[in-house]
Length: 312
Image 1 (cartoon, rainbow, N blue to C red):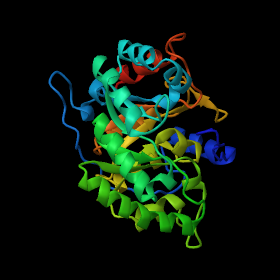
Image 2: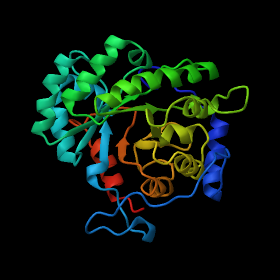
Image 3: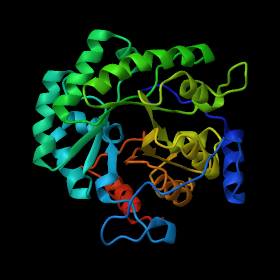
């Protein structure tokens, strides 16, 4: 589920992807490239190509959709709990009281108080095609100090829809770039399951129809895996679009394809993230649409602990 809408799931494709991951091969034939290091080791850390590398905590975040009810009901207590769990970055998915500049101004002091940074925010496709609303998105992002504004869906689910979206995102991306930020697109499964008449996936159509300097990608590695991409396919996809895939959602899945807390599922993140850190991925945002409550459980805490400790 995402925003109350069911995400398409092809069990056979998912199982093929798992089998291909186990075999160390591609399941879908995603075009790849040569991986070279674009992620310098920080002091005290070993280069990831020699093993033992971990993602710096400054690059780990949480999509607040993962704790949406808690955040909407008790925003300060929720942000405090996340900071205590070790998070330094968050990705916004609306504000208590309304998603507008006035409410963004009430959230910013809470972020500052607990040492949290709003890296990005999610907004529906229609908001990027409405000039007035786009201006509000940019203003909210400015208030919160974001680097990115991300569209997580809403594009008409056809080849033509994604081709047209490319042009629409170019127009929005121009204005977002002028404001000193970047526009991103977050996938679900349908972008990889759907294909145009020429055989290209909807995801590839969007890549081809948009300017790589105006639309960047937030690769949801859980949903791409659910769509049948093996770990190697995910790596090839990042390599083929190096410099364009700057953000990621790190989401886990059970063997039956249902959502899992990060570290308890079957997505091969040692392989995927080991490559991502070499291919210029800048932000690693944990998400589980099956929400938790950091005020009453430790799920968000454990997911952060897993990603922070994962050796790549």
